[in-house]
Every structure is written in structure tokens, then in C-alpha cells.
Image (cartoon, rainbow, N blue to C red; front, side):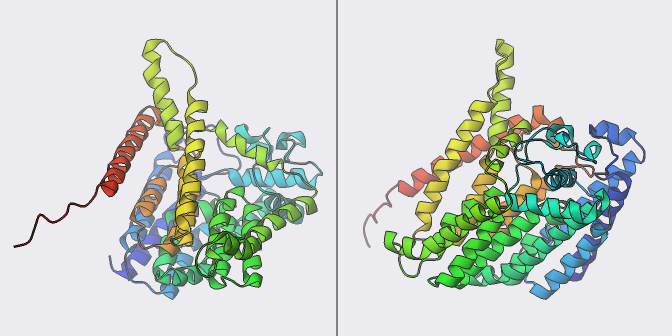
Length: 470
């Protein structure tokens, strides 16, 4: 597709999504227990679904069509800005999390520790806008974001004002990514325009990070900034400490950012890997990251309760997580035999165990390879093997891998498919397709495992010697 046509195709898609947001987005007074059928039968239902489907389709097609194109960074940034513009002034799309942010901020501003009590304890003045499942659970976010949420609510005093400020914070995160990603891309030999296009023009960014105002936007921005600083100054204590601080701030938004810290420590080394070099150079990165997390936590007057809050993600059961899909499939297969147990804790536990082993293996391989690329692979593994998968989680590995490798087809494909998993008002389609989705995901996992085993065997097979010469 020609560049100019892709730009205006994506803009048309963004405009249609803005219409869907106005008519039936994640509105504060919306139905908190919708289904695809109830949306269709509700006011403007067919129009809302059509705008969402066509808008997402146009935006996704424009992004996908130029994923391998040679693009200037300036052209990409102008195009992304145009695509984001219609969504900046429309209601949230794809998620009700921004209302949870506001309620948790109100709790913190009211003197309640959101890691110890749910938002219903105050209660939050906007409790009716928040999903039922999260009203009595502790906040799963890091201390920095809790402080930011409290400041947002204190500064605005209103739900609409809070949403506007949370969206502004998301835009700041996207802008930080736009500023720092070219540095990381140049370090890894990836064209800056290509990296920016893959990372920022994805429908996941427009719909979920900006329109949905997810805190993932700020986390990704700080994470990319930290990696860029480390990559630009290996062997220099000042930049390495600064990069570690930025990574720590990212983890103080969402703890998942800590996954990349061990890989950033490897990237800090000058010369070949050794334990001494790792301690000498990587110690600055690790020390900066952990130090800032502890400092922010105690400065906020909080504790480390956000670690236990991460367990609340298990309340959501969706086949988009492979370990969850496997558990669902086992349950379905066992029903004809009269077994009604819950295999999810077992399959999810296996998934987390596999993740732990895989992260160690990736770090070990990264010692003699490009650790920045392996940081992206570690994020991809984390998102794929966690008990819960939301589409916007995929922006974490997508952004890092866009800047660190040219082999991004499979990452982009997952992002493309994920863009269609959540309706305009935040209704997740996996919830209503589990009897089909779970077995298909399980089958996909089996196919991938078979291919990995065959590939490993082929790699170990000795190369046959030449039979002879003429």
C-alpha cells in the first residue's frame, strides 16, 4: 500500500473507533455486565459493533501493510499523531481500568493503603463505574503509579478530569517511547523509522494505551528510556546508574519491567562476559533499579503489598493465556468421565515454572549474544506464560523487539490478532468463546512444542561428511 494511502486509511479507522467510543465505549454509566448479544440488541448496537470492527480493521490493515517498508522517523511520528488525535477527545475504549485507577487514587488520597483494602472500603465516589471483580481486591500496581493516581484525583476532584489526566500520562509515556526508541534501534542496527512504526502505529497503542489510558504506556516509555541509556553508555557508571533508575521507575509502575533488568546488566558490560565484569558494570544497573523501587515505596508511605496484589490477575479466566487454555481444555475433556475438579491451579503453576526456567535459559544465552534482543524475548515469554493475558500486554515485547531485531513477523502477528479480542466497551471476546478458543489454543501449543522438539533434534544432528570427491 502507498504510504499516503496507508496514512489516511488508518486515520479513517481511528475516526470510526472514536465514533464507537462515543456511542458505546467504556462509558462510566455503561452496562458493567455486557455480552456481545446485549450490545447488539442495545441502543445503536449494530452501528457500534460495525464502527469497532471496520475501524479496527482499517487501522490494523494500514499498520500491517507497512511493517516492512522503509519509513522515515518523521513520517511515522506525524502519522501516529494523526491516528491518535480522534481518540484523545473520545471516551475510553476497550477497558474500564482507568476507572479502577481513579478509585485507587481516591483511596490513597483518602489515607487508605490500596494494597491492604479494596476501593469499596472508602468507598470510592465513582465505585459504580468500576468493574465488580476489582472492587474488593488490592491494587496490583507499583507504588509510583499509586502515588500518581492519588495526585491525579487530588488535582482534579472529578472522574472526567481524572480520565483526562490519566490519558495525558499515557501520551507522555508514548512520547517518551518515541524519543528513546530510535536510540535503542540504532544501537541494534534496526532502522529507526521501522522500529517506531512497529511499536507505535499498532492498533494496541491507539486503542488501549492512549484511548484506554493504560499505565502500560508510561511503563513501556520508562523501560525503553532505561534500555536506551544503558545501551548508549556501557561501561560508564553514570549512564548505567541512570538507566537502572529509569528501569526501576518502570517497575514501580508495573513490576513486570523487572524482567529486563538482568538483561540490561549484561548490556552494561564492556568486553566479554565475566562475573567480575557483571558485578563491576551490571551492578550499577541492578543497584539503581532496586534502590529506586525501595525508595519510592517508602517515600509513598506504602509497603510491598503490591506483590501479593499481582495474584488477583488469576481471578480472570481467559483462553488467551496458554496455561489457562490448557487447564480449561483438560476440564472439558474430563467432564464426560465425571470429574469436576479445577485443573487451572496446576496448569498455571506449570506455566509459571516453565517461565522461570525459560527466563534463566534466555539470560544464560544472552551472555554471548545481544542481551537487548533477549530482553524483548524475555518479555514475550513472560506475557505468553503468565496466567492472564490482556491484548495491551503485548505492547511490552512488541516495543522492545521492534528496536532490537528485524525478525518481528510473529510478534506483529500476535499484536494484529490481539487487536480484535476486545470490543469497544471493554467486553472481552475470549470470555464468550472459551469452548472453542481453549482447545484451539491448546492445539497451537502442542504444534509449537512439536516444532521446537524437531528443531532441537535437527540442530543436534551431526552434519554428514562428504561421501568423497570426484
